[in-house]
Image (cartoon, rainbow, N blue to C red; front, side):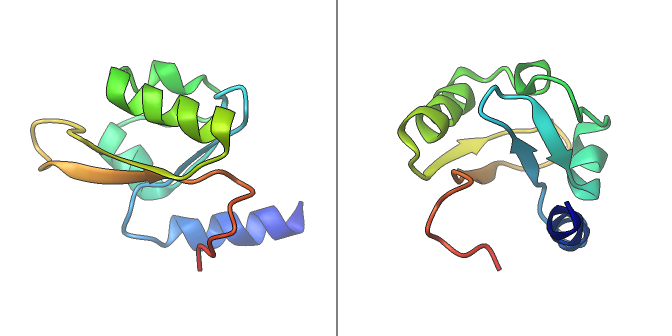
Length: 97
């Protein structure tokens, strides 16, 4: 658990929104910037309470079911410009840091 806490501390310092879900789509971590732009802390909730865009949810399904990295474009809200997000499976070979 200490390793997770260290990782979460690092992710909280990023200027990018980070949301981590488990395989059941329950949000297990949301960094401070994500909480700021979504204007709510959705930790422990199902991600579909936060994101309803079918394109993003389809990418999430592919990432979870097929264990592949996906990228999608989206708009969070009118006050923030178009964004691009990456969905990376937890066991991906890619290094995050």
